[in-house]
Length: 371
Length: 125
Image 1 (tube, rainbow over the protein chains, first blue to last red):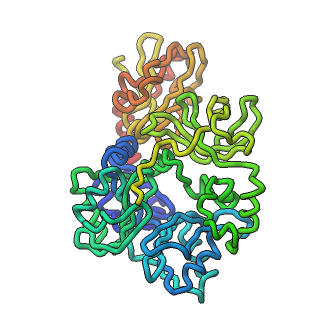
Image 2 (cartoon, helix red, strand yellow):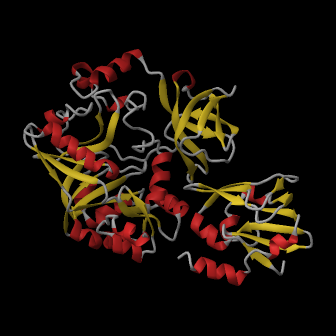
Image 3 (spheres, each protein chain N blue to C red):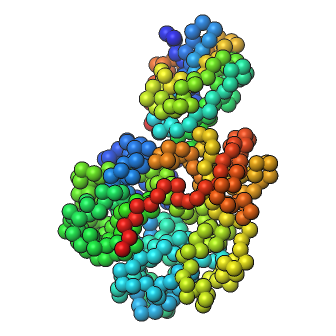
């Protein structure tokens, strides 16, 4: 029974390498993925913040939107400014629902003659169906099922990439370009989801293991699994789709109003725009916040949040331990009246209310290298 | 503590007179990964065999630690609040969780020996 279930999980091109490196493999978004290597989540997290971590994110969905109308067409589905993206510029944006919720968060890059999108693994089937349903006829949608995706993250990432791909030195945070990396044709963006400087490298699946081994041979690089990827993004205050944002949370509630382009605020014209733009002026009844527990007990997803009087005011959507801040930390939604930084709240962990405070996000200062 | 016994939930219990020391096994700490928080029972609390006694949290998740036998907690390992990583580095030593006054020593004798536990975890892999 177990063997049959295991067979049904998909594998990335780096599966054999993960095994060789001693990874603990777990099911994630339909794939068998490395949650950690023998070093463990704490060491992998700290290594990424101190040096460089290599992540296999090949399970994520990659696609091209080709055609002169692609940017205008995509704007009907997202609140971001896409038509104004300069060649080489990358943006974080959201697929919204007609009721103002979020279908997925993703990255889009203007690659010159096409848009390059990278979406969450767990949402990719639905996202590509969504694109096909609404954009068919306005642009060509090309799924890149034969591409792998590697992320190199950390303060040493730029120096490492400069050795293998001198052109990468030209990139600034949220820009991308096609270039050879170690002799392999790749599309490289200076981006990531850890709060560190770093790169994401899209490349042919068959070349992925070769480049991964090449990067791992650099003295500063260690492999990092999904466990540390989660603690890194949580410290960086970044949302995890399906947890911190979903079809019932709006961009305004989620604190992602900054993703709504200036022109888009005036013109609207994206799914759910009436509701979302109204919320920009009228406000919302709940907000995503950062939470610092005062004690040492981590508060996990779904932990109830109350005021200091015990009245329920919200729920934790992501929570755990931050290896860099050396303390538990969480994100969640609370009633807007309780969302101000410094508000005293309680986290009800195992039926015991424990004092905590609303804090500003992110928990760690990001180290993006901006232009 | 010459005779250490083991549970299927990966706790160990070592007798010293009427008092037993309880912790989690090396196998358990490996499965959990880096321990970042431990919540221990207070002295005087009555625990029952198989009932909740403590919580151990790794970066990823919280797990329950059960009492291997009936008894009354006499002491919790205060060192774990400041240094929960002791559970990883010395699960069978400094990383012990709590001590209990055992109600019925026959319950201890009925648990797995080290050899039996080794066979048990070999079957889990």
